Length: 468
Image (spheres, rainbow, N blue to C red):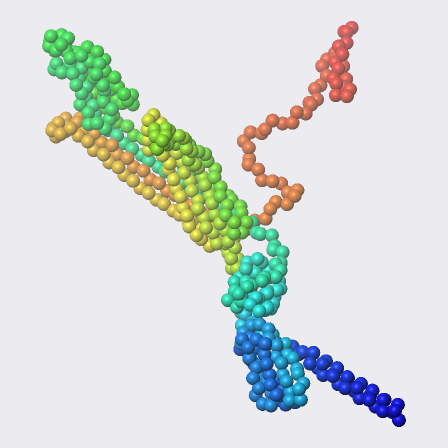
């Protein structure tokens, strides 16, 4: 009897312990719930609920709807724990994770980058981007689109290996033609003592003879009317000169015509990668003296300015298989006709033709980006008042200089997608008018009469036979 009672007591304790273990196991296990901000979910509880509690009401809001239903609403990104007590005393735990609604961002990324595979995941206030994109630019743009959806954006996007950039060559052709013509007519008179007077007449447009070396006849011959003593000089020899010693009178006639032609044909070519700027200069530098100020006031330093043929451009291949180009060609030459002289230094001017523009062309298409026709006519007329109004003889006291110039300029550009020269292919080289020195190779010389030529190991021996 005692053994049966002890067995019953042991069995009761065992059942109570098992029930407690089952209750603790039920209380220790927790269910995971994932919600997005602004969405709700209803938990169906199997028994009647006595009370509920949340660890973070700012993240998840829980409220009982009925005796067996609990409404959970996501309010902000984060993590919260929900505890539900039944009337029997049983407790259930729910681990709630509230995430941001990323569906609009996923849709935006899919529409913006349809050829890329981008996945978005959130962790509280941070967003993580994973997947593969074709270029670094796409990855940066994806991060920029995701920035308004989170405080911190972590990019784990893998960029595909980009293909080799295409090489673009730009062929530019400058065609310039400058023509000028001038006519000059003037008469200068010089007197070495005619009518007892030493002097000259000039309109100033042509160089007149200098009378500084002629003495006055009134002081040398007592005013007898003889010519003055001394010499006079001509500064310009390209004239018609006539002198009458018996009249002590001479005339210098300037009747000149000149024509000039300047022709420039430049074809600079430049190669660069897509989207990269390139520049090219074929020319030189000329010195320019610069006067310093401040503590080194009066000191002269030399700076060098560039001139010649310059080309800089930036190509960009578009999706339409065209080439958008920002091009800036320039041709400058030294212009000594407009040079200035300062403190003994002669500084030449620059005649410059510069264009800067944006165009879009297909491969091997050409376009005239600049054109210029400039006609100039300068007519200078000078005369001596009074004397120039005398009939017939008044033409002697008049001078005229007429200058005409005409400039024509055309600039063409032709972009082209090019490929490098493969190994083994001949390289393009300029055609030389004269060949370079040939290789130093030995030449075969025929043996002379009466001589034996023998060559051994690069040595030449000549033996002379005695004649019989």
